Length: 478
RNA sequence: GUCCCUAUCGUCUAGAGGCCUAGGACACAGCCCUUUCAAGGCUGCAACACGGGUUCGAAUCCCGUUGGGGACGCCA
Image 1 (cartoon, protein in one colour):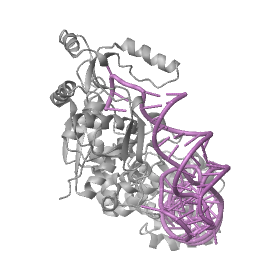
Image 2 (cartoon, rainbow, N blue to C red):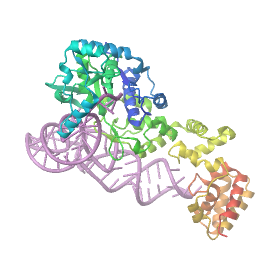
Image 3 (cartoon, helix red, strand yellow):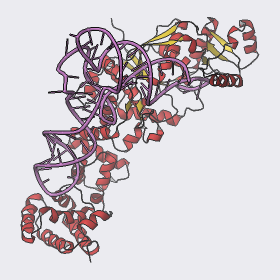
Image 4 (spheres, helix red, strand yellow):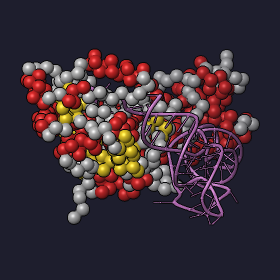
């Protein structure tokens, strides 16, 4: 019988869920779903000083928003300290680890020396040769110490990475790294390995920044006699300057994209394409298609720059794919959460104007912005548009023609108005476009909008006439 | 600095020795559609980092150089 695939996402709650972490989570999740495996969520909160509840909530909210549901957890490392303590005792007893009483000051000096000598810093093993009995006495007397792994200084450590192949590192440069800190808390390297084993993780899919740690982890697995999982180190997500994506590149929190009104479907699709591809022509993929087709073999090796423009495009594609009913529902939901009293408007009417603007908007925040002149009569007129179409000779008389025509019109729909406007265009010897633009600016304040007949229809006769009169009296050339 | 990873259009990528006069997508430009803007359609622009090998043949394999990234914490 084939083993059950078990993967995990193990963020440390020191900040929000950023897009790099989200992509790592996504790859794990896709792999689990594709393989019929289990996806475990583990919060690595052993750094008490930097971990916050706020961050935990943000991470969970981010995962929920993306629809990356986990099968187990969240497990908290801070609640599993007994396990690490037992493991620490065990590895100390076996002789694979030893207590180190070196002070931070001494280590700092060593580090500086290494830097001056232009060499990689590795701990000099001062405490490695300490007599176990003496070590035990000093510890019992309460002398602060850490636990270090005895790393063989001969030979090479080889990692078989599913994405990168064999990665070899000289053991001599690994150093006797720290397992537990002075305060007894496990380090990342230690807790991570203990937990992955304890939770039966079969595949560790994580960021490339962890690759240099992996030989250390392997050593730990060996010291405990544990079977190591398989590793896959996914490439980094980079900012436009090719450096690891960070705050200074702008929005890196996944929830920031939610708040801008990007669809989780689009975000998932976009993130999947950062370092993975299906073939030579497919860009649009639904969640289901992603699950159906995901494989570690098709993950790239090189880092990928986060390309906002492609996300915006994909967002549009996903919006259209949602269909009118669903996309308007999402838009209503978004606006309700962003200060619009949705209940104050007729639902049918609201859906109609949303439908008018949705394909002209890159995201829901922009959609809301584009809806402003429908939702309220208080809106700014764009100075440029006014200058170009209203504040010029003949604009006021033209608006008067509009006012007359609309006042007399039995309805403001396309069928009714178009023939009349064609006739007007003919009579005034003004091109259709030149006829429309001043009216558009008067009604919307801008020179780009949905079709004018749709705008008129949505606004209704009374509001339209008011706006035309206002424009004629206040915005046209005196 | 040391070690590790990496290298195809501006960007995301296809490409696992001949299918490559290198394909798709975003972006950009032009045209079409058109009441404006989007959307859509068509066209165009644009890349195998460099140098050596291996081979009848290399974007694909090997070596080196250069560029980029990462790690070097009692952070994760």
